Length: 251
Ligand SMILES: Nc1ncnc2c1ncn2[C@@H]1O[C@H](COP(=O)(O)OP(=O)(O)O)[C@@H](O)[C@H]1O
Ligand SMILES: [Mg+2]
Image (cartoon, rainbow, N blue to C red):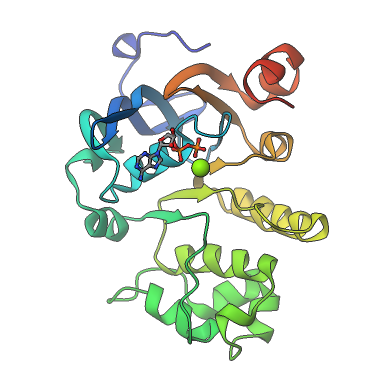
């Protein structure tokens, strides 16, 4: 557990790298429903965090709070991305500043080809990855650049969702259940994609029911239960602690 008083640490750097994201005691509501109940954590640049917990624990709501999408309503707490006060931003501002949420349903836009999906993601002026660079990372998307996005396989749609985030010059990558509904062989493919994301050094939060797969990829782990943090530590610690996994993850 990280119980260090951050106020006593020197500035924004440590031997392990720069502190990049600081989520400080956020509280969020859907109407009267109090869902995110004082969540705090920090990430360093380039780290991958596995955000875990049972169904209904508040994982999606936490991601949505970070991306500043309309609901849930963030009523208290602060979110800092380097020196940017994310808690003060609207969703479109957060998106422009490089906070990219890939939601569970992936939001592939109907009637658009792979290429058009990427063009649309590249908010003017083009600041994100070029299509050429994206197709180098995902040759399968390159081969299908003129195919309609919705006709792609589940795994390819997930790649396209990731590619859309890269096209937008992502600083903080938020992935909600990227393996959901995908066949095991496709999951392996997405895992390889995420390994590449890791090699690129993108700061990423990945929510996943497939906790073991996420933990193998992640540096850190945060477990939520009923809207509160019940574990904050390394991914290794969770992999090595069967009791913890049984209690909060049922794996
Ligand atoms: N739009 C909503 N309106 C009201 N309650 C919601 C809404 N979305 C989610 N919730 C509730 O918030 C809690 C956390 O949900 P969610 O963040 O989606 O959990 P998880 O992603 O961990 O499964 C659940 O009890 C869920 O029913
Ligand atoms: Mg969810």
